Amino acid sequence: ATTVPSDARITAVRNDAEWFAANVDRVMNDWQRLIAQAGEGGVVLWGGGSKAVALLTALTPGHAVRCVVDINAIKQGTYLPVCGYEVVAPARLGDVNPALVIVMNPVYREEVESDLAGLGLSPRVIALP
Image 1 (cartoon, one colour):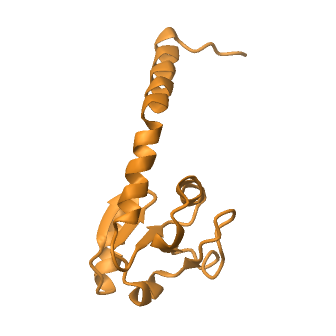
Image 2 (tube, rainbow, N blue to C red; image 1 turned 30 degrees about the vertical axis):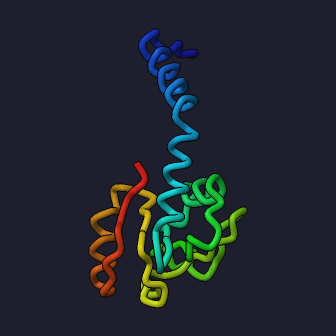
């Protein structure tokens, strides 16, 4: 059976699309600036999935992003498709000492902060919405 979306749902999707069109350049510029201004130690992304690939491909941050961290041992030692950033284990962050960690999934922000503290690191931590 075919389901027809409600007028309210259609309006909500239209509003979201209009917001995106009006704000995408500003939001992307904000992320680019945040990464570029991270300082010595650079940036690490925590989470080596499709969200990281999409962000890194859209921003092309260059050498400011040092690596991507993932707790999945199968991903460690590999490289993200398209953008080519190395995926490392959390324990490798001691060598990197990042200034900024961007958590791909906000649900894990507190866990990541705890893991970083356990490694003796205290970078700024932010999460993608």
